[in-house]
Amino acid sequence: LSALSEHILEEIRNLPARYPQPRSAVMPALDLAQEEIGYLTPEAMSEVASALRLDAGYVQGVASFYTLFHLEPIGKHRFYVCTNLSCMIRGAYQIVDHLKGAIGVTRPDEISTDGLFSYEEVECLGACEYAPMLRLDHSYHYDLTNDAIDQLVAERKSGQVAVAEKPRTRRAPRKKAGA
Amino acid sequence: VPELRGSSGEAPDHLLTRWFGTPGLHTLDVYESKGGYAALRKALFDMAPADITNEVKTSGLRGRGGAGFATGVKWSFINRDAPGPKYVVVNADESEPGTAKDRYILENSPHMVVEGILIAAYAVGANQAWVYIRGEYDEPYRMLTEAIEEARAKGYIGPKPMGKDYPLDIRMYRGHGAYICGEETALLESLEGKRAQPRSRPPFPAVKGAWGRPTLLNNIETLATVPAILNLGGADYARLGTAKNPGTRLLTVSGNVRKPGVYEVEIGKTFRHVIMELAGGPPEGRKVKVFWPGGSSAPVLPESMLDVTCDAEALAAAKSMGGSGGVIVMDDSHCVVEAAHRLLKFYAHESCGKCTPCRIGQDWAVRTYERILANEGSQIELDTLQRVSDGLQNGRALCGLGDSGGWVIDSTMRHFRDEYEDHALRHECNVGKVAISA
Image (cartoon, rainbow over all chains, first blue to last red; front, side):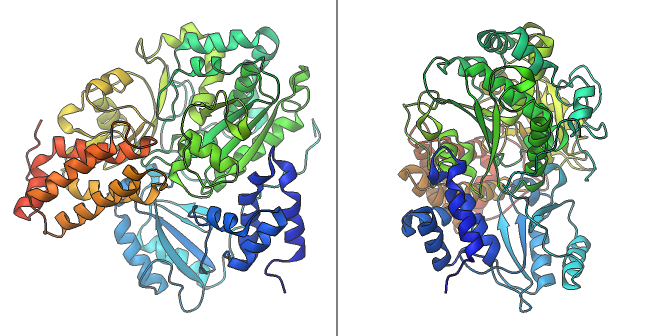
């Protein structure tokens, strides 16, 4: 039984043709794998490697370099809280403390018992005029307060908000000129 | 849609942001109704490629990504006549702490970026451009992708852009979380599907860049400025700003100010104007203590140097730099040693591990800061910080990431020696009571 579904593997096999050299497909391929199963297992990375005709160790080497690839399970919803300087001096660490209580974890990468949440502290996310801020799944949230955190958590606990769909690297359908 | 925080609307120094805030500016029709794509038309039909590069040279534009290299000169390094593919690679990996201006441009006016990219590609003889955008930028990615598709549908991107027999294409590539990708050769490694570790130079990207081909690398703000230069003419653009650092640039002002935002200013304005007037100064009852004038990598300046101007020469004279234009302001309620510790944690985390001074040095500095902040410091720790700072700088590391950590240590110790000594020697923090040494 393979870790990745056949249609994802097929999509991965078609990626290299889109780049001047096939190796550039490795990160988009890992994206597809991570999107399908939530995080990158050794099996998934091996399957990506053979679909791209690369060495499995090479693919793991790439995946382990970048923070947006998760090599361990994460919660259904992931908080990426900026604690770099601009956010820090506007209270980011207090936000982290409050968030831990709100989702019921004691440390980064720990998954809440309901499986819904995990968090990590991240470096500058490039939205410093709205500090303190965070990225939740695939969207930014600004001017954070404890109440705002509580609301983000509550909306997801009640199922009002599903995981935001990630913008795909696939090309949008072409519109006809003048349409 | 979050509220716009920063420059928008007509003003003499709003070359890039004058249309920001216009409803629908992110669409091709509205952008074009404001005069957008006139510069591309002019470039394709009224100018030879070499004339475009010369116009950019005349403008005196310097790269807005951090290094501040002369843009037109960089363009002229690409041999247009070399056979085989050439590429434009656009650095949208904005990750310098305290910097949000490329995001601001992409979210407000993505077609301005598309137009700048197409002009640059035509000028240097490339047919394909790749935008490397940081993975966390979901919304800017979506907006730029849509702008590219709109331009493609309109016939501005394709085999015959605007009818000109010169194929132009723009492709997107998403990063996956690594500050080092802002360094141009690390970005190229990443684009090629590798761990993002900087390359030794030479060869320079202009000769051997993306996929081994001649490559022009420019930052988003740099390319977004190009249409304005062609519309105004390089000479008129150069009338703005200072003689050696012409034009306007976008400064992201963050931290302890009342109106944080991305402000477009004529280069040469003082940081007093930027921080105290545009950004409203510190909160009631607080004083500015220190500011980083160009992202966290730019050596800090104390409040007494608020009258330094934001051009490259004045900042160099003040032993700092313009960098990415990220102005981080900290008031007197915060401790400089704690801030420096946080930044060294950042550089240690982001060190790619390829060269020893940076891999070992940043981590060593973090452990030394931890001892000092745990009240376990002494003169030994202060000397260690100074030594590590020296070991990170002056070309000992393969790229600027090493120097950056060293500059944080060096500049905070130079201007705030008292705070360091309070912590390391007297095991106390006197924030709020400390006099600033000049």
